[in-house]
Image 1 (cartoon, rainbow, N blue to C red):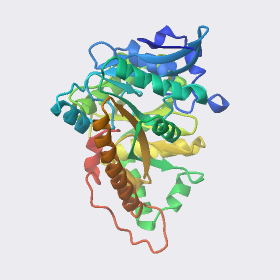
Image 2 (cartoon, helix red, strand yellow):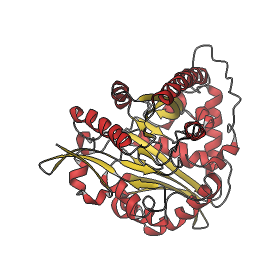
Image 3 (tube, rainbow, N blue to C red):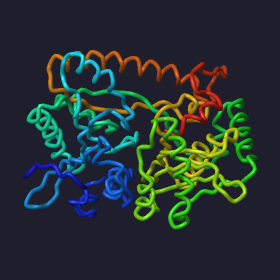
Image 4 (tube, helix red, strand yellow):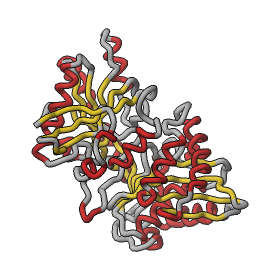
Length: 399
């Protein structure tokens, strides 16, 4: 078997790559590790030269046939990752080391859990060992595998990687049937609050349109680009994705997309972009050119729940951030990452830190569970006093 890196996903035929992507019943588990999504990032210039994300995808071949692969990048910074390593970078550099470039096995700008080690289970340890070898042979600081599956995290730990646990907020379908069924499972006060939010949002003076497949038109992306730029400039200083990215996904991924637009006077004024997986709807971006009360919650969270219920999906992942999601039925869940550092003492220090961090994350998740909006015996209807619990969360973007 030959192990190599390639600097463009287009060096591999789409069908050859995609056969490695888990797709029970013909629908990919998530669309982000597909050839079409990774190619859209590269062809649009969202990753590549000058972006700090240089593709170096890891592949295993035998007799010219692709057997396993991993989306892999040389990183010149720590932006667009959503599991933060700034403290590691600072400590490494204060000790006199050069932290960047580092290696990243991930889907750029996408805080969504999914497979990172593509191919048969017996070959996945080889991918991990190859990543470690590349770090050692090139004198690099580290390799990071972010938003991997729990199974991959367990495998990585066996291969000497450090396992990190952080958290997100996901909505889980408990066989609710429809939105009224979901509301019926909530406490009375939370049920009334959500009904009021939906009514407030839907009274913004326009209409809400839910679009997927061929209902999506090129002009929709002109509007969404304005929304994305507004959110990106406030959150990151400049947007990560280029305008061309949206043209690419329109051409190749219309059936993987669920776009919600709010229109007033015939013009889109807000929108939320979601990607469709086999069992999960992935909320990715939100933006607006007009502020309307509760419209963020309607477009990002409630329309996503409607879609998931209508299509028999198991969950909605609404991206990074957000205690404000808790009151709307999105509960804390663990997410996973792996690290390997090219220094034994530094590894021991980070391992101690991750043990403490993991314990704190679990304690916070346990504490937050008591504020879940679902009916419980003896529930007291308390709410956590945390940042972003009100309409100010509308400014945060769909991340």
